[in-house]
Structures are given as structure tokens and as C-alpha cells.
Length: 87
Image 1: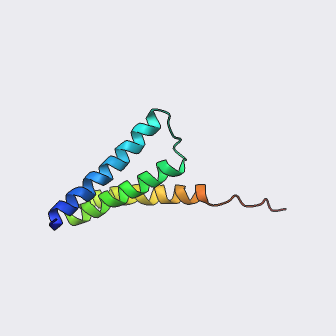
Image 2: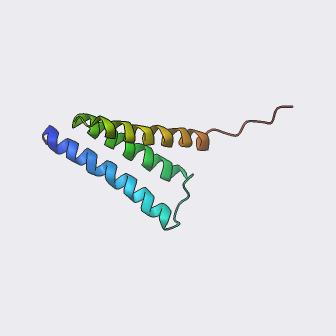
């Protein structure tokens, strides 16, 4: 597989993860705070940000990078145990 084909697979995979997560959420099959929804968004956006860098599209690097970071921060909140209340 040549590099162009690899990047095509990367971009299509990222797209399918983002759109798939959106559709599953819209059909009520997972919450927007679920682990699988947030992981799919983070991975999909990360893949598309990488592809955007490869094709030299800085605005899409910024857009997808933002969504990747936002999803990772939300994922961290979901995975982090709640803190005990301080007196």
C-alpha cells in the first residue's frame, strides 16, 4: 500500500468514526457522555486532523484538532473518579 492509499484509509476511517458516533447518538443508542461516543469522536477527529496536516489544510487541522482535544477532555472527565467533597 502506498502512502496516498494509507492516508485515504486514515481519512475515511476518521470520517466514519465521527459520522458513526453522531448517528448512533442521534438514534438514542448512546449518550454524548458515553465512553464509546467520546472515544470515537477523539479518534476520528485525531485521524482527520492528521490527514488535514498531510494535505496541508491548516484550518481543518485547527478544527479537527479542537474537536479531538475537546473530546479528550470530556473523556478524561468521564474516566476520572469524582473527587470527595472538601469541608
